[in-house]
Image 1 (cartoon, rainbow, N blue to C red):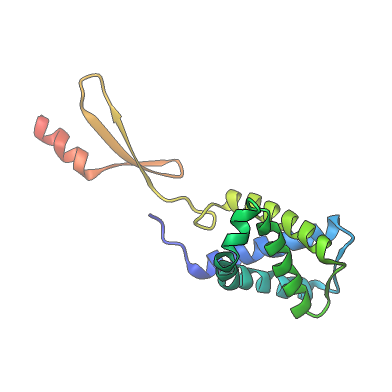
Image 2: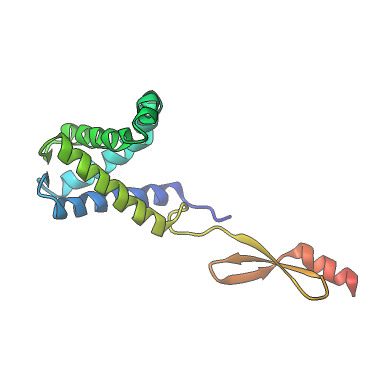
Length: 162
């Protein structure tokens, strides 16, 4: 497995949040930032709220989420985005339903960007793969982003067979 520096991973996800908010600002007229500093603070605060407050609210609203077949989740995301807009001076959203719409867009767009980065902030972990020859001997390799290394265990097995 790759070790991913937590600071770099934090910066990557902060950048994704900030980029998502900036793209939403460019697409929707109902969301506005006074300056770049406001955008950066909003991206940071949205990440903090999604990390710490959202899981608690998801548990508290679980019965309503089940009853509405998941339709409570975009509303919860909209409320959290409106909370960020209320806490950060210079960040404005025109109304509740606009907040829900923008939050839905930010969620989908940041999901897309995060899937491009992967769970490790852009680095892929090692994967073990095994291939078998016609004779039945197994060969294993550890693959990291295109580079291949033979596993020591299977080398020992091949040496014993010789």
